[in-house]
Amino acid sequence: MAANEKFGPMRKGLLEFLILKVIAADRVYVADILRKLAETEFATQEGTLYPLLSRMRREGLVDYDWKESDSGPPRKYYALTAAGQAQLAELVAYWRLINKTIEDLGA
Amino acid sequence: MRTVNSISLNGNVWQIESEGYEALAAYLKSAEARLTADPDRDEILADLEQAIADKLARYVSATKNVVTAAEIALALKEMGPVETTDNEFQAHAGAAPHSGADAQPGTHSAPGATASPGAATMRHLFRIREGGMFGGVCNGLAAYFGVDVTLVRLIFVLFAVFTGGIGFAVYVVMMIVVPVAVTAEQMAAAHGKPFSAEELIGRPQGPSAGFDPGRHWRQQWRDQRRMWRDQRRQWRRQRRAGYGFGAAPPPAPPFGWQGAPYHYGPHGYGPLSALLQGLLLIVFLVAIMGAVYGRPLFGWDWTAVMPHWVGIVAVCVLYGTLVRQVRLAGYYGQVGAYSPGHALMALIGSLIWLAVLLACGWYVVHHWPQVQDFLQHVLQALQNAFGTAPSDSVKTSLSL
Image (cartoon, rainbow over all chains, first blue to last red; front, side, top):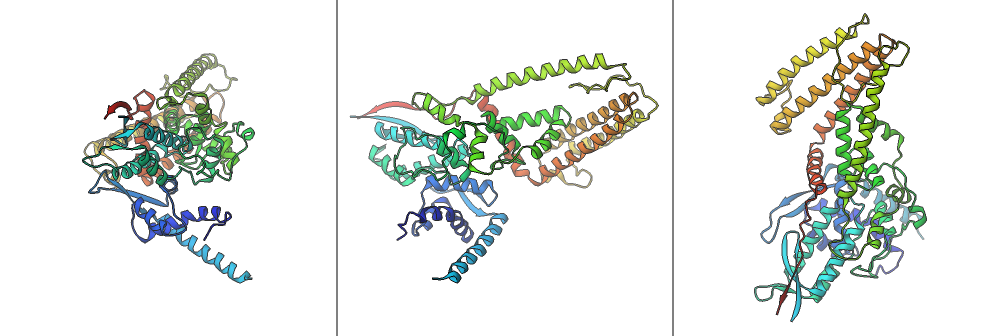
């Protein structure tokens, strides 16, 4: 579907946006994020997700709590911060604008 | 019969076939190399190890406790190559050559922003906002000297405390003067030539052949101490030479200046200084009593924000530094008798310093989690610097 190579960088740039959306919908573990994205064209692997989440946490967009799990060690349980919510709102608005621009320019 | 290595992943032991072990070690090693510039490197690596362990857990049972090479390959394929999605870090990772140990050659598409190797060898001082606590000055310095950022911060804070606030002023000045690294090229320049890559090339492959930041840092620390010592000597010399010459500019107060005998002149700042000191002492006594008994200070319930002992230490440190400033101002005021204007300068300096102190206090109160985080990092860095061995032990055993 999205086999076009030019879409690669676009997907990469949008990944953060998608992650914000997934976390905004519900407090999640990393495994949940991966599962949700796996069904989309934004399928992601741990190798990419962990560094990205760590950066988003540094930027104050997301934060995590440790939660005990019944199997294995405690897990990180992610949630959006106020700044993360603000950025998500901004991104959604911007995305609508882009959509509108694409529609308006129409072919 | 196959050789099996037992390894520890984030604190748990796993038995892995030798070939699989090689692949896993290579994967983690390349992950580490890619994340060299990432301030949260250790945390991410721990996360990755845990994620791998979770995947391996599917392959072992009560009757099968060894993970095969094929299963490792599957798990690593699921993990995917470690990429820093961040543009700034990509420049760094892109400049690092793919060591032959890359677990999955070919699957990692080279990041778009590959800095040319020639440009990356120029080393420039930049502020690095990414992962910085305040203005990214320490972060930039750490990248510039290739040392742990926590150590730089620690040195900076100690420097600031022991020089009675000059360090803060230096920080503010550097925040204004030193530019922020914005583009990928600037980020690469901030780190200079990628020393991590050089380490990787120049070193024989092997799990134990890691970069020893402690050695590097100790060397720097020695140089720094030498510099300070020379400076102190110079100050002392200046003080001896400077006294009594009316025309000579007032000597800079020496490093450990605590208060020489006063000769209160007619300019009137000396008594003022003494009065201020007395007032401070009274406030200090009230505050320390309150701190010891855990009472609110000046209407502020600090016990909710910090542990008890921190409050006591903070009061002592605050008092010490304040008194220092007042004494210094007194010192300048006294010297000011020879060249008027210095007393005023000192007063202004003290006021600026107090403002900086207030700003720091405000920062601490409003960013307490970060400060706590920082203190933890300091402890960790100290442990690392003084040679506590890394925990990942690797031993080899045989299984049938």
